[in-house]
Picture 1 (cartoon, rainbow, N blue to C red):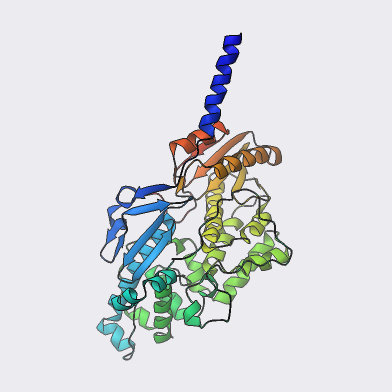
Picture 2 (picture 1 turned 180 degrees about the vertical axis):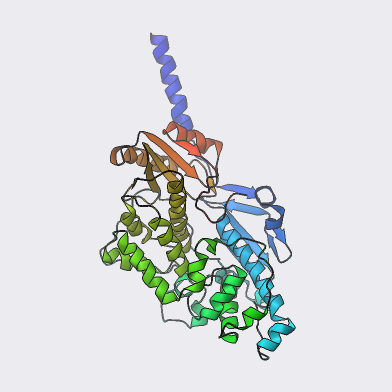
Length: 417
């Protein structure tokens, strides 16, 4: 009996020691995690080393239109689609048909190589560099004061700047985008409200030249090489007036049961583009489950563009989950979106990679307890759009979670190639 007790103590000690072994940040080789066409294209190149300090892989890109950083595979896909769009727009602007229709007006697409070399930092910051990383908190919402407001993370304090200086931020991405610019964005299959400053400026310029939208009917643009994340709500953002689209989104939030103060706070959060707000509301509206209004409140606290995209993609994964089988409730006061489907609680994580860390260990244990108590779940699942390390798989299994990787239902494009 003493020998058996000793063996149990040793076994418990081994498990505890293993559970306490957390992983350090990961690095990857771009050539091993991306398709050859994503690593190197005719107008871009992704740096060989890819870091993953938290849940997203960070890609450094050089292109004919400047340097940029993409935090996450879906952002990388978007940036590569935008490089492709800029090149197609540049090519068509040089055609005789465009020149005649434009009446001699010249469209300048992108910065010159000289300006990129002279101001590499400014170029990177204008195209997705220097933004705040996604935080590690997957648990309860942050405590905030009643009058707190979340501002655009790329909009500095101080005197207001010109439209040209602020166009790269989510809050100001709608500036100068007229109906003609939206038609060109549709033809290019890109987001008319992109925070890519170079593409934004090109769309605004072509919109000014083609005010009536008649030039675009006379030119032929090649089919895009890369699918953009805008495709899911393209019909709305390309064809609808911005103000009308805002009102539609606000009405959707109200129908979900969100209170007026929550609706106001969510839509004045400058870390969402108009397209981001639209993607979020369309996805959440497709799932008639308890707790949707609370998730609007949660998403309103996004403190960066990357966090805003996390909430958008979580909502899209929820819509994909519900399409397969009905979702009946959503766990309230949780940054990670947890849905009840049947007797299971399903956590939806639109992450590239998950490693075993102390915050993940704590969050998985906390969410497991709450899901059982508050949602009445008897089974626990995690749906991850990317992949997990062996240690993360084992740690989550010990916490009672069944992990499903590469689940991309609902997402416009897959973050895992």
